[in-house]
Length: 272
Image 1: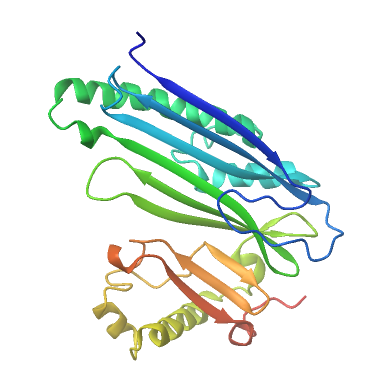
Image 2: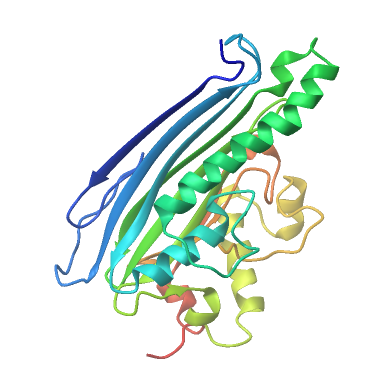
């Protein structure tokens, strides 16, 4: 009997404009875009011993990727954005397709698990459950603004301990250029101070407090400087900044979102 049992399942799905992996996607508003999206689903489990009740590592990847104009640039940026962690691809400038990256990542991740956790389990078999691992990625594409697609990845990882870690990563794609835009692309130089003030202002409304000190008392931005999250969604009414659990507050606070309207951001936007 094999000492390691590996189950792999590959499912490919194709939709004409937007496809979804575990999320809701919006339809194409203009109907004239040259960017389309496809997806790949992969699921694999490896056990450290022949006993399937023993420690195991489970990976589930549902990755959306671009097709068409600028697809290579978009996909390369997505692969290196932290959606797959550890980032095995940062050490090489060589471009790789998302299906190839997913296959390579899964193989290496499971091999590393067998090596690293296998030796630990041999030394301590009394705490088998602490050697269980899980890595789940679900991605989809949404269109909340006329000029942008937003690539959204929900990532859950567990490597022992009291609870796993949930992270969200977002990338906003300019429909015309195919470029993934950053805050520096949207705002004038020196935007940071005023934007931080707007973040505090809107968080105070959400938590019904008066100022940053009172937010700190609720363990929000306590001991760290205020900053705009790199994970944000551009929509027709403004921008939503997303902070993952444990990022700026205690774990029980969960994911924190800050909505800032276009009217509040008006003085910060670059003139088109």
